[in-house]
Length: 355
Image 1 (cartoon, rainbow, N blue to C red):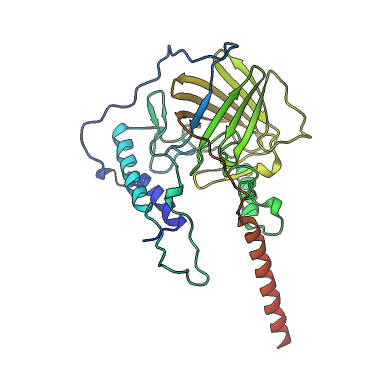
Image 2 (cartoon, rainbow, N blue to C red):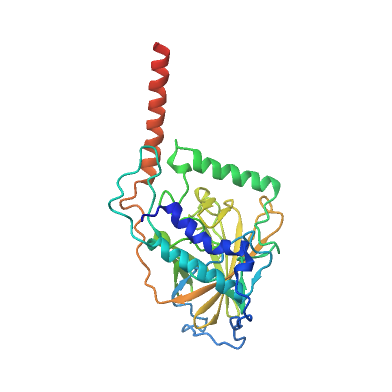
């Protein structure tokens, strides 16, 4: 049996869709939920006394940015979470079967498929915040949705359409497709979970905190106690300045590169402007957990600031090299395919005119 990328993604979603048939969930006694964080936890510290975020942390989770229709509330019960997690794992295991080497080439014009789920690591469990199992990272607004204004949504949809349908200019294509940054918003604030390569690693000095995102090995340098640079310099991951509020690292980021406004992935779509402001808060709440909070503010796009909460899980790693450009033919293939279509259309029009 062989599996295409479409099959793999369908398998990933299958566990989530169990909620459309809640009667299928066992009616046993409600299992115990995860424990709340210890309010008296004392984090390990750097020589300067600030909390240490040293190590490798993962964003992999079944929880996604915006609440899906199957959930009406922010919190998911333990019984529902367990049922979905088990169903998802069964579906993923079935889809990890190797591709059939005897299947042969697809028919002309058919989809060529993609890698199977062996190569994916979207996470096997829901995110847990202080003992609550979460259905979405967004906690404000209460519906768990990005609060685009009418004008902001129109701008976001137009930008996504241009990035997907324009084959004339490589700089219009999405940044992840061009291998400049990771797909979606995996390394750029707000840092979100995607299908694979969800690890991040922190490096700290008194003056700088570096946040290395595994997907496309981008390192964001947070300058402690500094002011933002002017808008003439717009970096791919934005301009990040930080400060300590007690044991919480507060980071403000703006001046994003305009070519990183469209952040599209299988699991989320976010559109931000270069001048959008993102505030992040990092608090170590356990040996194995960093509490990550973010607030996105842009009155030109949204009816209100929107806020999210996410746990970063301690993991053994390692951080893998994300070799995106090497052997990646997606962008030249897309542009060359469009040029071929144009040539065929011109040949057809010439032939028709000569008849």
